[in-house]
Image (tube, rainbow, N blue to C red; front, side):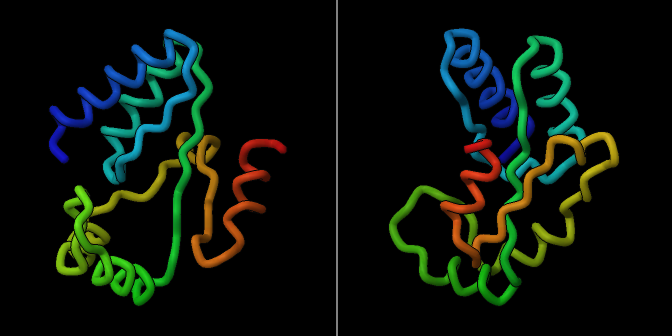
Length: 117
């Protein structure tokens, strides 16, 4: 996704959040500047924010990507290594928002924990 796409995604998310909807910005947000913009926007508007960081071993990620068929996602097994190499780690100030989900473990239990249920 380009910066323009992320900007549009964030603007649409804010419109929905301002109308009372819970919003998930489903994108990789692998660059600090993209996360900073989203965090600052949420803080300015006094909106709650969580960063859900999904993890799995690299072999599992490749396998899942190779099995995908007929969806809109642009992710491929070939791009995975490049994406991981370019991904910027979470900063100390971002860590307070990060919730880790191990996608090889029971998702329901982890999501209940994240959502405070």
